Image (cartoon, rainbow, N blue to C red):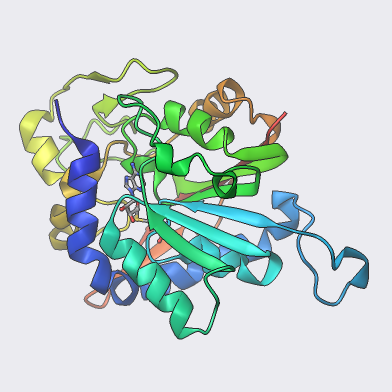
Length: 283
Ligand SMILES: C[S@@+](CC[C@H](N)C(=O)[O-])C[C@H]1O[C@@H](n2cnc3c(N)ncnc32)[C@H](O)[C@@H]1O
């Protein structure tokens, strides 16, 4: 059985130091997409100019945080961000960037972890109260890397306080590299809607697996580097809605397609892939 967690850890450990420079334009674009939708996300954000909410406390869990895209996007409107990522090098980048900006650990800090592994017991180092009762749990461009996204929704839902919001930014179904053109938008290794984690192959077979890409990469060279880390070729609204509902975070569910798409630049070439943003509140 493919160990997706291990593959992701290895790949992102090796690519962490160049991640921000490789994807600088994409990162800025997604930060803007998040910021313009902050009212839509529906949290009573911190507003430094509004004294009436000066006692407000807004805690973000930035899951699969990478170098900190979502934390950076929401930093002006929150009290604190806790990043968690399976890759220690990504966590290092996240923490270095926060400390370079003079942000204290109490406001922005990441740790290494995997809260979404349905095949093992929960990690006891995440049982402290600092890892619960978040106002927002967000996953930016990480959902397509998860072995069992339905389980991930449940595991992250548990970390929210009542009324807290699960926010996902990821891709709509798209054809994967090496899928031989049948492009039905799903990976061949998935655990939709439950914990049944099945692995099955269509016509892409091993060849497809080797050529699979990170959603961020459109260029074949870039894609091949991360090919083995992608578990899903994007998600349809109905799949995401079901995951939210089954995880108990389906209140006020909404799903928006980011109209402009997400642009990738590589060696002077600009490419576009359609992304979505989904939100739902814990009952
Ligand atoms: C494409 S990057 C996205 C990083 C960041 N959220 C962003 O939007 O730039 C995917 C991230 O998911 C992390 N990841 C993959 N599987 C994970 C898991 N099971 N638990 C935690 N993090 C995971 C990777 O290490 C990587 O940092």
